[in-house]
Image (cartoon, rainbow, N blue to C red; front, side, top):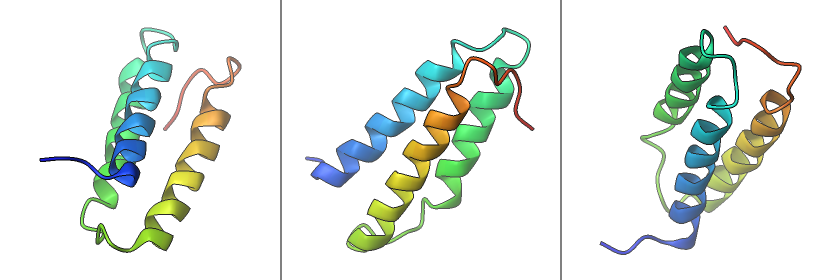
Length: 77
């Protein structure tokens, strides 16, 4: 199955989130990974053709990734 451009962007964002979690302290890494997994899982049922919603969530996810990528952030609840 071929993926659309938006689907590729979503997968790319997910991979970026997991890569960033590897930069966090060993003890808190699972917290970041499970947070990312839960955030993506929350919206798994969204219609693929609802482009506005998908694009909004991508922007929101990128902002969150940028925020949590900050080296000063050591843990997430």
